Length: 130
Image (cartoon, rainbow, N blue to C red):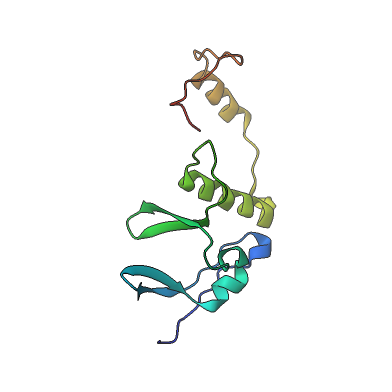
């Protein structure tokens, strides 16, 4: 197997992203993703043979792979989850980048939702997800 180049964009303890290289491999009659050994050291939850994983295709050439934990009743949007994880990491790593809303922005938001009726006791239909 050819040498695999690794790119590190941060470390896991800070929540910053890391990037690992790999290749597509044939395993019996199936195809699999082969990732470098460093990936499994950095993310040991993926290293247990037979563990269930989930791959969400989130765009052309882009996939989000995660450990498939116990079944959940609700379905999470993997793109929103990835975005929130990114925001969490950014806020922890660079709190100086956080900027409070200006009063003019708050006024604009209040005007935007002025005619929206909200009932905190209302039960939302099943097809509504967040």
